[in-house]
Length: 291
Image (cartoon, rainbow, N blue to C red; front, side, top):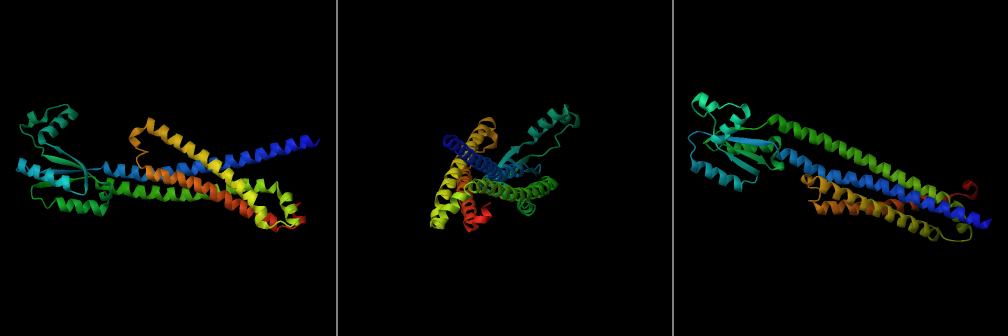
């Protein structure tokens, strides 16, 4: 009879451990995914900004020397990420390919101008910053016009701000849920041992002595759950990198390492705090309140 009861207790204990590890794993995995999304969201936002092109048109009297001089300036300019020179002949060919007719032959001359397509660095694709860049470039007397989509710049920045705000709200919401779920699982685990806790207290064991094995056990379970979450996150990153290499998810390895370390630390911290307060609660209860 006692053997059957011992087996039942062992199965219940294993089930309790498994539920704690599973809840820690799932919650930390979701938080880790959210963390990885946050650190890559800036990269994605920067990519959106840097895809907005600024086109600088030169007057017809601008000769090759002026063009080469401007090219050299752009190479040294802190705001230019990439740029490409588009001659008027190349621009005419592009337009001919698009519309399907040779408009140069029809008009008798090429009305287009030599130009540079400049992609600015993300830090300069803001309303004030890009206006300063435009003002600086317009000081060149050989530049006839500068064209870029001002509405798109404002729209991209406004939407990025909104998305960033919602990401922060969702992050905070998920963090609270994570703490509550892990805390709930650990409290249920401690609740099943409430009589053992009170018996140890009645025979003279100190609160610190009673808490220690429960805290250590929960921290170990938290470390196991966090370790599994880290392995799962690494697997997801490797899968996405192999299938979508253009995203460059593994470029910033320092931030990725920081997220993984934070996941592990969070798993240890939440399980330690939850177990500490759960055991403290039962230690402060009267014997009659245990029922």
